[in-house]
Length: 275
Image (cartoon, rainbow, N blue to C red):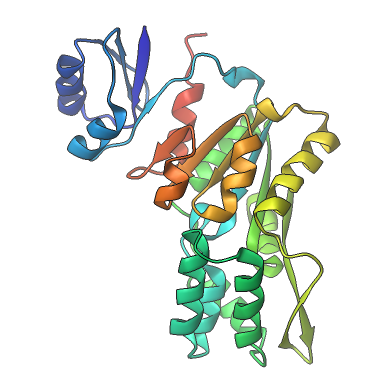
């Protein structure tokens, strides 16, 4: 028997889906579950009902999850930070176009990041604080998800192809266990246009997951990875469970869980067990 999770408390919608699937409807605290023996065309149901639906993977042991690794820009937070810095300095169009192409998987990420940083040469780091204070917001459900994982002793990390300044601030604000992001050269409080060290591309994100597994003595199937862009695919492939959050099509096609309408706290629905 299959179990479909509907990440909503809409009873009318739940009853409609239950009829379509000839299933047994079960109401949980924050969502509905439909148990059915019918085949489920989940992509079609998502399209026709405009609601978040996911199959419960009964092979995956949610009780053994011990690490959450989340992308930052457009996943944990609502913006692409480097794009916002560009907006603040009048260079938004060129930088945003490169970012979008990279997130879609159409540009080499490392080259695209170095190009964007070079465009921002001379920009004052005061713009970083302006963006953090005035434009950066947590995506819906982010704080609830982090706090939930803290309550069940799951460690949390943010890894970003963006700038270290923002990842470090989020790390402190949310009480995350660790973080990794790109370091850029700053001289006289201005960007020089140069990147320091390795660019955190798709491979480096996967390396970071492996590094954390070694640090915390975990198996990779104890890790949940969340992301939205092509740069997240490598770490999502090696994690025990992958979540596409309001993600690019290439990411949605290559992950376990898709969240397009509700918040990050929808992930908590999978941990609502009978015990």
